[in-house]
Length: 189
Image (cartoon, rainbow, N blue to C red):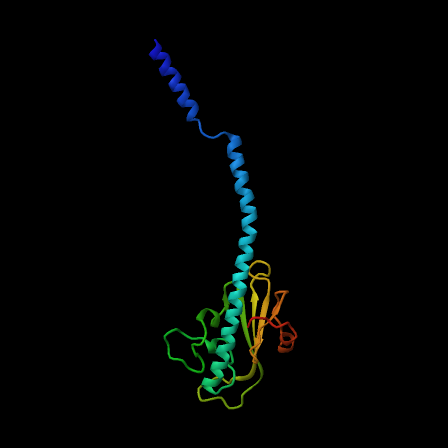
């Protein structure tokens, strides 16, 4: 009889031990996870925007450098388009596809890492371009603007032929060289 009582009390004890978490315990765990997520997600978004902005500055530097290399290599002044600085990797560079830029930036929709890039020639085209080349220009305006201000980036950037990168905290790209030149200079160039 004692064995039977002992077996019954052991099975009751096992059932009590195996019943799992109570609703209160689960709610506390969910609340803790929500608090941690509410702290981490905004920081993650800020970190991603900072990374996108750093990538945009780097890409704008690459565009500026590519424009100078294009000018000295092809004697065609500055390139007429972003596409003229791009081209297929492994292809033969020409003045119309010089393979100086990343294909992603040099082909439509000209977007990378949450930013849209623009390259606008300035002034009149040169009168006599090299044979087979689209005419270059004496100036340019290169811009990088966030795809969604406040989500993919907060700051827009611009540069022109002096190679100085400037920034605008509104996230809107400047529409002219004069507007770009009126913006503050990005330090640590």
